[in-house]
Length: 258
Image 1 (cartoon, rainbow, N blue to C red):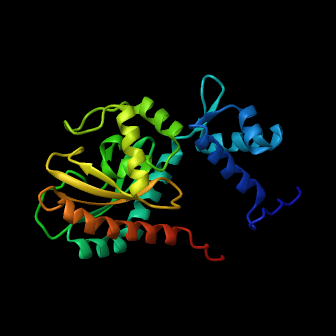
Image 2 (cartoon, rainbow, N blue to C red; image 1 turned 90 degrees about the horizontal axis):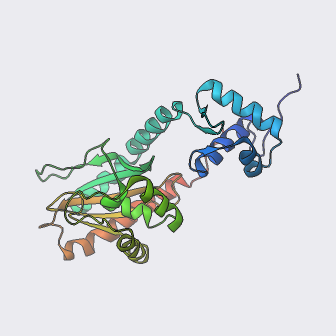
Image 3 (cartoon, rainbow, N blue to C red; image 1 turned 120 degrees about the horizontal axis):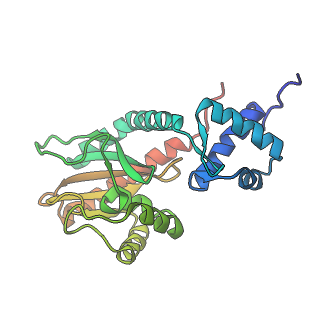
């Protein structure tokens, strides 16, 4: 049997192609036909069929009844574990943020149309927080979610909202897609999002998207509205931006050679 050719980064070519197919499936919304994958990847159909069959056998891809292929359930465990490890890796920076601003800091990622909180460093103030690690919420009703959505193409945001709907967590939650679109434009311009008691009454949140993250992610600071006043937000927002930028810079660093 001939040896596998090496990819441009030194990896085995078939392994590189398999991961690229998984990325293509994710880019299409999680489902595609073999011919669509061939068009997206530029690979010949026999190669596509061989790689997809292997991924199906391993559980990373599944074949639906309509003969289209979708991301498999086995990826869920990998994704959730990777998210939690990302959170553990980010905790030192979140701790520095708490030390600077005196309020609770959070890290969240966008996973399967939901915001999932993967790390939290609480403040020294005693206060019950609605948000906790592992909690899942819809993005339109959270500061971190709006920060992420503000950096996605408008078409992706519309598709996501059509899938999830826009239920209200409080009377302040955005429930109209047009009003949310205006809000997202404002967030993109000012560089941070505010959650004005939209997830939990009496709580304000300042959130910033992490630039260059492999999946949409955002850092936030949350606390009672009485402490997170307009003056406090003016001080906290730049600190959250610095931490988000530091996380993004760390993620973009070249990997070490093996």
